[in-house]
Amino acid sequence: MGTTGNGRAKARYTRMQLFGIVAVTALVTSAVVGGGLVLAGAGPTPNKYYACAKNNVVSGAIKVNTKPTCPAGQKVVVWNQAGAKGATGATGPKGATGSPQYCSGYPHYGIDWSIPGGSQGCQLRGANLAGANFEFANLTKANLAQANLTNTVFSSAILTGVNLLQAQASTALFDQADLTGASFVAAYAAGANLGYANLTNASLVGANLTGANLQFANLSNATLRSADLTGASVTGVTWSNTTCPDETISNNNGGTCIGHGGGL
Image 1 (tube, helix red, strand yellow):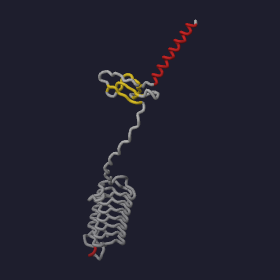
Image 2 (cartoon, helix red, strand yellow):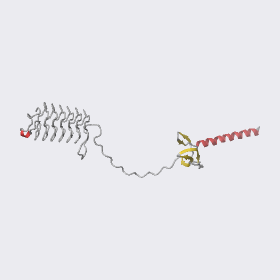
Image 3 (cartoon, one colour):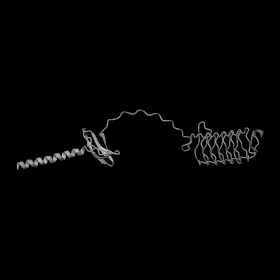
């Protein structure tokens, strides 16, 4: 009985011991999960892992601190559970300065859509900018030909040299804007507000300015040939060397274009 009991006890101990060995081995063996390697709870030693790999894909068992002999076509790969932190790399060279983005962004109060040093400004030909707010904006030399500017606000804006050829600018606000050298040729600006605007050297040839407000506008050297100003308000306008709708010069008409065509 004693021998049998001791034998059973010894056998039981042996089975437990084997179970412990298997469990420890499982803890330090990696499992392949979803194509990635997951290391399970390894102790401080052993700390190197070996495997055979083909095309960077591990195949077969992962060994701990034991370098395997790999089949033909495979190579040994080795890694630590936690590698040492590498040294900080050198600072890379400074990148090139990016090109400035002109004429971008949503139109808003004070936006700068000028192009420094450019012979032309923003290309907005045919754009639908109806109701947009360009108050105090800078659109120097912008091309707004045939654009829809109905009810658009350009109050106090810088519009020097802008092209408004055939633009639809009815009831638009240009009050106090700088339109020096602007082209309003054949533009439709009925009811537009150009009060106190600077239209020096501007061309308004064939423009429709019926009912427009031009009070105290500066039309020095401007050209109004064939323009329609029927019903326009011209109180306080500066007529200086202005070409009137009938092609006479204001300086030869007593310093005015009133009574010289265009419904004035």
